[in-house]
Length: 339
Ligand code: NAD
Ligand code: DAU
Image 1 (cartoon, rainbow, N blue to C red):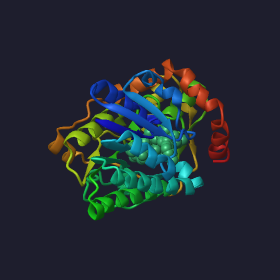
Image 2 (cartoon, rainbow, N blue to C red; image 1 turned 90 degrees about the horizontal axis):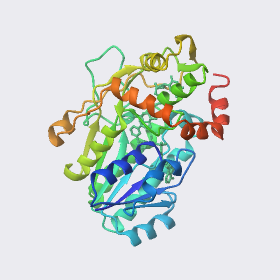
Image 3 (tube, rainbow, N blue to C red; image 1 turned 30 degrees about the horizontal axis):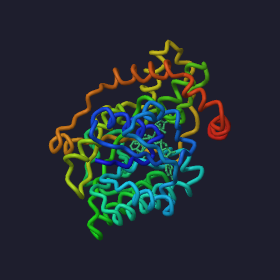
Image 4 (tube, rainbow, N blue to C red; image 1 turned 90 degrees about the vertical axis):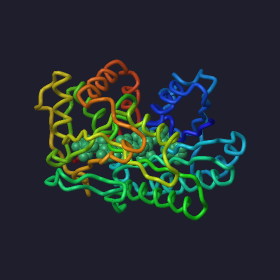
């Protein structure tokens, strides 16, 4: 198979590229990535010399770049990871989220129709189900729940999902959608909760916990997500949505305390700051469908995954120090300076 992976210079996309090159020696991968602030070519270095891998810099919303690429490469499969992915940034500046996440998806699907792609897979998020209350641990997100949104980010991802289903019904585009819970693991940009807290703890800086820290997320090790998408590509039913998650709920305070304990840092570093606007309370995936239909279950327990992740950040300091030393400094000051 020849697979287009968009957004492959970001966190999950890069992990997916490594996973697929390793697991499927028969497949070829082309990565299309605009190298925004979140994309990093250094991340893809381990794949660059592989003859079955090629990197192309380009914007998924740029029709003039996307169509010739599809014509030249003749992709069998498209896996669309490319997105603006950070909720806090979407609250500051929603516009680019609509362009990349909605219009970019449209351009990729138009090209997929034109050049006969056999599967268009949209990498979606559980945030399109809104949130669940904290006092109803019996409730979980299932695929048949209505799509809704709390942030401009989740609204853009929900819009993209609706468009993907519309292209399936109207034009017969062979699509699948996965909706995954919060990922963690190697190469995550240090603006997200876990790597941000690791970097701050190592620098003995305050750890900014939004609100009361009681918000709950359902954490999944990134490799488990990659394996689930691979299963969906090979055995998933066209036109279907698959939730991905593994009953690994933790509130933010628990996550932050785990990180501090493993790094041997004091809990006095925890600093409660102003809450995120529209902050979703709880995410929790019901993975019954992907388990029963495709036999997928997560393999990495949170306690092991978080230890491996912390070790990875300790072993790869130049990778994230490089990121937080540049433009990111201004972002941090803007987001956390007066919070
Ligand atoms: P990320 O921000 O780390 O990476 C996004 C990548 O997309 C970057 O390499 C960036 O350069 C690229 N990109 C952005 N705009 C582009 C454009 N216009 N054209 C081409 N490339 C562009 O994001 P991530 O955390 O790896 O998330 C990847 C996907 O998975 C997203 O679609 C996100 O919505 C979804 N998702 C993420 C999580 C999570 O916990 N991180 C969970 C569920 C779903
Ligand atoms: O659920 C899937 C989603 O998970 C993905 O679709 C998004 O792309 C991804 O960014 C993630 O969204 P969250 O908003 O849940 O992730 P984030 O790491 O930004 O925040 C996790 C929780 O931690 C959330 O409740 C907000 C809180 N938080 C976050 C940061 C960055 C803090 O308390 N302090 C912080 O500094």
